[in-house]
Image (tube, rainbow, N blue to C red; front, side, top):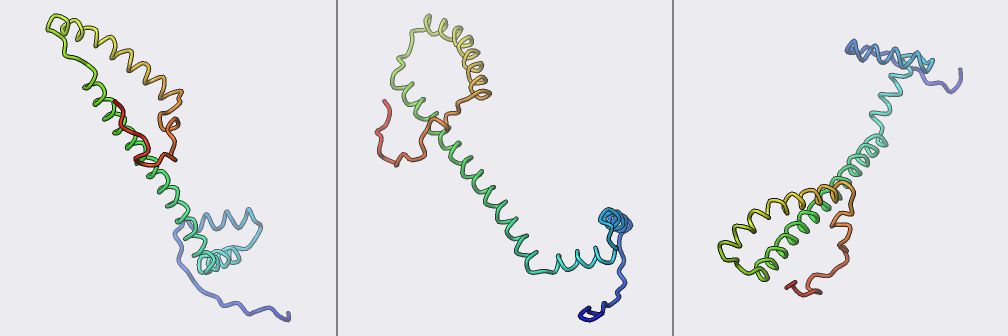
Length: 146
């Protein structure tokens, strides 16, 4: 046959499981095991395969970077929210005399239980605080609360 290149025979050792997978794949495709092995080796050695793998790794790293950026933002929002709340609470809540303080501590358990329930509902059904806060706010454009 004109134009057909002569093939070179090689011997390779394959793990029995790999050999089984090769046989099964070749049977499903109705192709020879030799042709499947040749195509697999060519694909593995092809520069396009290296580029494709690098692109897949780069895409995955980009996804991880975006997730990490969101996590950093969410943690920053949490810390700042807590700091603003504590500062506001300390500035606006007067100390109670002891008899009233005792009653307030007793009521705190009920209020805390209500807080945890409300937080659970919000975490389960939203909206999340980060969805309510714009990412476009420039630092220093809003004064401190309180």
